[in-house]
Image 1: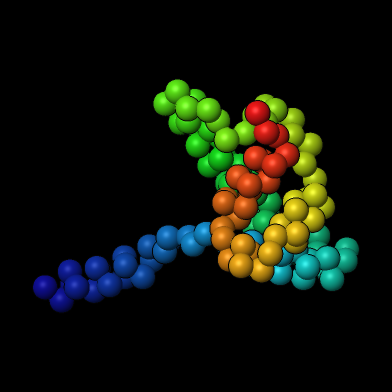
Image 2 (image 1 turned 90 degrees about the vertical axis):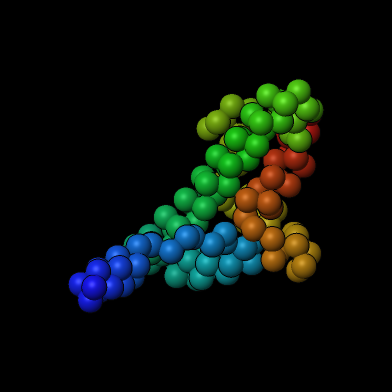
Amino acid sequence: MRLITKLLAVTTIALPTAAQAMTVQEFLDKAAALKAKGVLALGSSDITLLRDEIKSAGAAYRADLARQTAAGKKPSSCPPPVGKTGITSDEIIKDFSALPAPQRKQSVKVAWAGLMARRYPC
């Protein structure tokens, strides 16, 4: 019995916790910190973190669009194919920075959906 309890404790500790959605403010704070580092930011893992956050938000948004279309609903936006949007990191930061403070508490995924709807209306 003790062995089972110890094994459960070890596996529970070893299991990764569910990732929490990054807020827009957290995204902007990390981006500002990277910018302040200048060229030294190239070695930071936060670059990958921010890039992955946008990729994840984009993939989730594309999946939502596919569900809307499959359900026969009008899509919330009509973006070009994946990889053809041409949105730069500076444009993302500018768009997110323009959000009022209360909206910066929302997830990057929600903010990305808003950016896409504004940029690529149907």
